[in-house]
Image: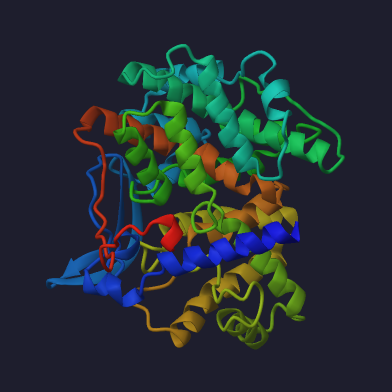
Length: 449
């Protein structure tokens, strides 16, 4: 075994030697790393009518940071949440909006809910033969494997007509909660030696209600819990088209691939800690702060510890205050702003006011600490990940389910972008890379090497 490890280390060294590129080369050839320039502006790679992010406005010809806005098909996401809050659950209504471009009336919404409910079922023995067959603590991997396996049950898997892709998207939106929750229960049973619960979804319940019901052994939840989770799903449903997993969706769609392969690729992108896994890091960081700061109300002590985190002296020593800052937003992330009020309600109901006060303090303090440490080209504010992990922990949702819940929401946005790409697709998305090979090599015969 040691011999194999040593060999791998040698091979890794060869890779590092062969593949290393000097950072200044990217400037020399004007390559925008991460498809973003030095000011954080993204390279425009497509057009979309599904959503939009506003983070800057032009003032006297100068690009100026502004309060963030997120628009779904022309509607401010904050106004959407205000619209359905207290009257009905919003996930299905906003899913309809993103897919079809307009808000549904009562009969259209009922019909759409019925369609999604009819798809909340898995093939016979799928749970036993696929989900339980190889349980993993990485529920995103389990979810991806299940999606790819579902392709084997679809006789029209490769048909990319809009009608067929819509059918497939309805199905995936419907079964994502089952695939994720059952995947978690299988892991929790076989690897943690806990009891197994496989609750069937109810056609009478919303997506948020079904999620909580299927996750919990006693199937019970409060209206407030379901409402806050529903809002979390709506706010994670879509985000401007330029995020990594949505771009992946459109890139793979442009190749002519089938829906299951496209969504599996998007899932693989989302699970990365720089994308969908960020809220887990927030929760872990906050637990670390709570363990190492004796008095959570002592602002100077909290500030000092945040500086330690930023200076790579504490927590994971990566120098990041997780949940702060965003690739696009400057002064504020509208999702975090609208979410915070509901988080406060839930914290009060759960007796977690002290935790909420600490989150609020860090939300206010962290941008100041970050600004002192580094020159920043735009504002730094709390993003939606800062509060979503806290919400999920208050809802007693296990860490392993945090990113899958993101996926349960974002499958709607991915579906909308896949359909938009199919309808407008002209060419395969194929970016250019500049070759910087130093010289042309002459082949040397084996005996002379």
